[in-house]
Amino acid sequence: MKSSATVPTEHASRYMVQLCKHFGHKIPTEWNDHEGKITFAMGKVALRAGPQTLMMVSSAADAERLARVEQVTDSHLKRFAFREPDMTVDWRRGA
Image (cartoon, rainbow, N blue to C red; front, side):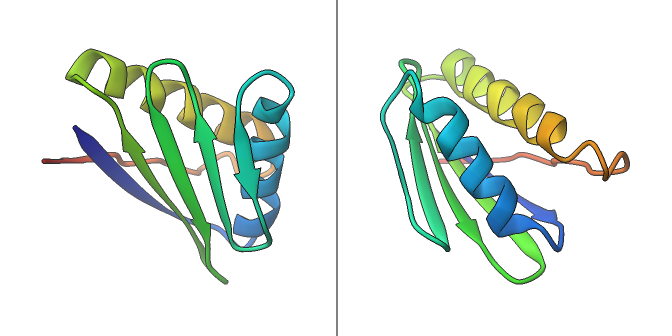
């Protein structure tokens, strides 16, 4: 199963790197200036930083695990983006 979210922010690259570095202390991650991947036990999230957006694609074996990947990614992103209190992450489910 997959889901995706596009988050408007001028700090996409910074947040993407923060997420990857943060999780990289305990789980496999990889990143460069524009793309990143985080591999959780329950699934994965791929990140792409654009000039005005952070694009995220989550994948997992089932809906329960996918929801957990979304929740963990969402909560950490919002923690790092505390200066943007109106930030919303709207995950859209796909096949």
